[in-house]
Image 1 (cartoon, rainbow, N blue to C red):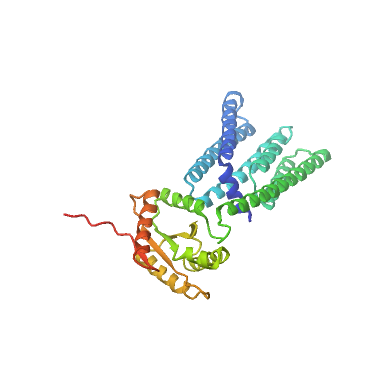
Image 2: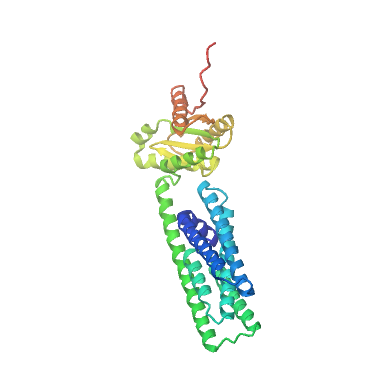
Length: 348
C-alpha cells in the first residue's frame, strides 16, 4: 500500500476529525486576529508580519475545510482531497516556522513551531520522507533567518532543537507504520467479508453495496441474474464436492468475460453488472455458454440468464425483480437461454 492510498483511506475514515482539526486552527487564528487588532502596535513591522500570518492561516484553514468537506461528503475528487492535505500540511509547517522565527527575533522560543510540527505528525499521516523534509527544511529556514538578523542562538538551542526534531520524526514514522499496518489488516478483513469463500468472486453483500453506489451516482448499467441448468442433478449424481467445483469453474468463466463485476448471488445463482447495453451483454452470455460447453467432465455445464438494462426511474428492488422475471422466462423456455426483459406493450 503506497502513501497516497493510505492517506486516502485515512481521510475516508477520519475526515470529520480532520475537519475538526482545521476548524480548531481557524478558530485559534480568528482569536489571534482579534487579539492583534486590540493589542498590537501595527506600526511595528514584526507585529504586522504576525497579523498577516494569522490572516493567511485563517484563510487557508477555511479553504482547506471547504475542499475537504466538498470532496469527502460527495465521495468524489479523491485526488483533490489528498492534494488538499499535502498543501495545507506544508503551509501549516512553513507558517509555524515563520511565526517561530518572529518569536526568536523577539527573544522568545520556537514553541509554536514545535507544537504545530507535532500536531501535523499526529493528525495527518504524511509519508515519512515528505514529513522529514518539511521538518528539516523549515528548521534550517528558521535558523538561517534568525542568524541573518543578528540573533545569537546558543548550543543548547541547537541541541534541544535537534533532539526535538529527531523525536517527532521517529513518532511520525511509528505513527505512519502503525496506521499502515492497521489499514492493511482492515483491508484484508474487508476483502474477506466481501468475497464468496468458494468461488472467490464478490458476494451478495458486495453486490448490494455496489448497486447502491451506482444508483446514488445515477449510473446506468445492465444487470444480469443467472443460474446453472440442472445444478441439483449434478449435486445428486456426482456429489456436492463436484457441484462446488462446477460453481468455481463457472465463476472463472464469468470473470473471463465480465472482469471483477461478477457476484455470487446465492446457491447456484450469480449476478453480473455490465456497462454494455442489454443486447451486447446478452450476446456475451451466449459466448459464456459456448465456453462452458468446453468443460471436460461427465456432465454438461450451461446457464440461463435474465438481463435488464436500468433506467433513471429504477430503484434497487425493481432492478432485481425485472431481471429475475427475465430469468424466470429463460428457465421456462429451454436450457442455456438468455432473455432480455422487455416492458409489456401498452394497449391503445
